[in-house]
Image (cartoon, rainbow, N blue to C red; front, side):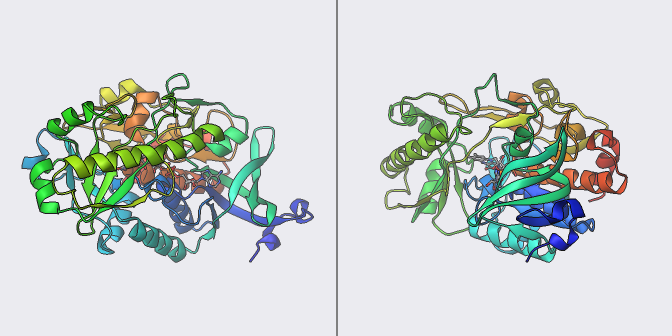
Length: 442
Ligand SMILES: Cc1cc2nc3c(=O)[nH]c(=O)nc-3n(C[C@H](O)[C@H](O)[C@H](O)COP(=O)(O)OP(=O)(O)OC[C@H]3O[C@@H](n4cnc5c(N)ncnc54)[C@H](O)[C@@H]3O)c2cc1C
């Protein structure tokens, strides 16, 4: 199926052209799914491009495994019922996943809660939503270049098994996680703390855990208790000393978030470099195996467990962020700042993965908001981002990057694209307060 009949005449003689859409979403992670569905529900023709053969991004391919960011952070979650603070598309997806049997009840994680999802069910829920919204999806397709005149984005070059093709759009939502479109446009991006980014993690799953015995030892909190941290500190082969383990919806199964991935020489990696990215995948094999052996030998209930599988790919927390009209500052997070154009609340801690123990800085009994213009590059026409590549300082990103929030960035970007098309306005001219208001009308 092609869409060339919709093309303006100047594009019709292109050798290979997939078509013209109102909105193209690059990347099918949480942000991309929400962006594509929302744009389509606004009545726009939508193309979603994803380099893998399914949606879910790091949440599925990286087995990141839980929906974080839905709930308020509190003093003593073990004595409280969870207070949900994010609704919108995040709630819609959570509810669909839960009804599909693909999501646990909220589980204690430090001072808040998470809910662990099943990746097979996640894929099905995403597929159901994309199909119900009549979205054109191209899997196994990578956006590799942009078609732009000066700073005005008109289309993109895609790479598929059959070669290169072009595609055109009125508006593009870059939900690639890595700000690939913005980067290819030559617009300014940055990486972490002067180029130093959070370490990746290879997630994996373990089966045949004696859950009662395991929970009696580990406790209700999914973060490792001090006795486990002490044991990990004595293991030189394990680079990470504070870990998270989540019981899943499947009996006897644990989702393991326990590795710190570096180079074989222990250097910090930049996974936008294919050499570093490859090394991350290879080093992951050994770190995951070493932690699994530790579990079997030291964690009661895991003696007879078996290694189910690694994530499809190493989990990448951070790469490029854009230079946005607004930037979420570390200080905004710490001081729980609210904004007139706040599009989403966040009570998730600064969860910074760098060094042997990830730092978790809690925002107890409060939240901050993320301003709309963190999604809008200062320069560039027809382009907006959604997801973890939004404009944010290093530590702030370690809080605002989780999936409940990414769903909502996707929704906000799509609402903005709809308005930008109707009103023929650049994204930079859209009132953030207008989007903030629309976000409140779930
Ligand atoms: C190890 C790990 C554990 C985590 N744990 C949790 C957790 O427990 N709970 C939680 O809520 N969050 C967790 N996170 C964070 C969360 O998974 C991510 O921040 C979130 O998935 C980001 O969503 P996104 O849509 O912005 O990008 P991504 O999920 O990265 O999705 C981007 C998508 O774009 C595609 N893509 C990229 N470039 C291109 C291109 N050029 N062309 C076509 N497609 C492209 C990718 O294949 C991918 O599917 C974790 C992250 C990691 C790495």
